[in-house]
Length: 321
Image 1: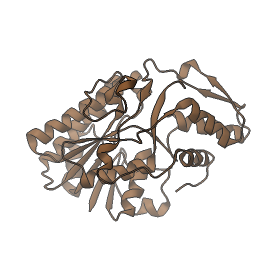
Image 2: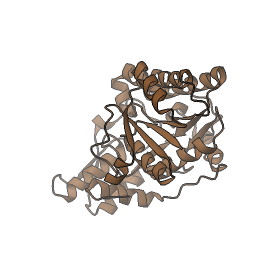
Image 3: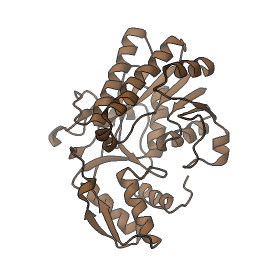
Image 4: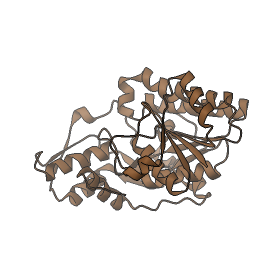
């Protein structure tokens, strides 16, 4: 099985590389520059087992050339501007990558006539927007109502995918991923940032004061290793044109997550809200219903506490598999 991963150098992309190699796939890693990641979670032998190619979703001709050459049987479309915060400062760039970039990719797949090829489009729970607590956990039948540029761009990407399924007969499955974290996540994301701050405290590089944003929010959290396993399940068994929540079904208080991280770090850090870390718009509760994907046989396997332990270890420079 030849599988192309777009955004393969990213946090989730690298974990997906490991997952697919373990499942016996021939993996093609698409990155902006065509080079393997210079840092992250992959071992040297894993990097060497992947064919790395230049893959830029803003380059229409380049997409067609790469797809025409490698003719993948599976395409995992992860490449995205993935930060909600960054989307507010670069709305047009976010839309060009997440929405128009998805259109360019699917158009290239159609024009290259990949035959039995199948695409997984990785969307986001941000497409749902604010949902009353009484109506959560959220099911996939919920109308989309994003309230930030990132969520809106992902919703547009979904519409592009459904258009190609209906009009061109492409085989596309949609994954609506809820919040996830784990070893190797970039510091611009909340939990990874907190873990990095705590690691600096343990090294004596920072005073024991943890800077945080809004802790009143509650989020459905998954370990990235469970997430990439879900992506493999979906591309193997998901229904074409179907959307699937990738979630745990349990909402965690970010205040409680911070408390556990501080406890596990042994720093005794005080927690302080930094106004600069607060978003212009935030969703107070986001919890998904995983019933549809669980029908495929997928269930989360990594407990939150294990995720936090591994996140702290990775932030301290330890190797985590």
